[in-house]
Length: 308
Image (cartoon, rainbow, N blue to C red; front, top):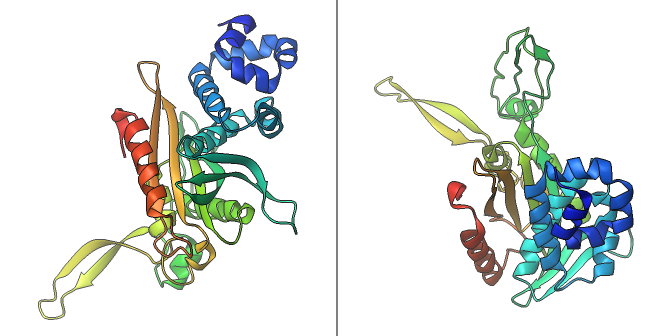
């Protein structure tokens, strides 16, 4: 475990943002907390330093000190800072915590100018711990949850799968939870302009995000009326945020999603993974120059172990 002095020397920008006085007064707890998460704090230090090229120290303190001094919020804050730093790295101007409009108290995380285009972005995180967030059954964890929202399956005339009575069931599939998360993010963003949600996936399967965007995957049984033979195929239901129709209407102001993932490797390095999802029905599509700049970043910065 590193001493608080060594940590402050290693993380000077972080020290400035949270305050040296606060770190010293909480040295016993923070020495252990930071040392156990040093990979993430090194990433945070790099991201804060990058943001410092376009954002004043005062603004960084105003935006991030409170969250970084709260251990229950640090993980989300690290993902927010990282996502904002990604956009800032390809931008010529960066503004933090921008008021949404004059009629509300809401603000969104960042507004950047990339290749002459103004981009608004809000950071959201998701930590899916299923089934480990359920009560254990002796020496194991068990549970069930649908892949298709019960309301959607009812509307589509699809019979819900029965589950064992002794298995704990979660009614909402992860894709529904993610869509709700995206709706919350859109509530912070302006109604007009190019809007991006930076989706920090702390834990969970990226396929659940794709189900949320493009519709859940189900098995369709097809019968040939002449030969009477049956065949099965995988299809997506029209329930995704990026689908045409009623499912996609609440998301028309969303131009794209930038998926991000940070996780430790076996050789004690931080793996970084990214993927850009474009909304084909967006009212304000992401400009090609911005798309190209983001895709170049993803290609250059993604860890080779899990390029996506």
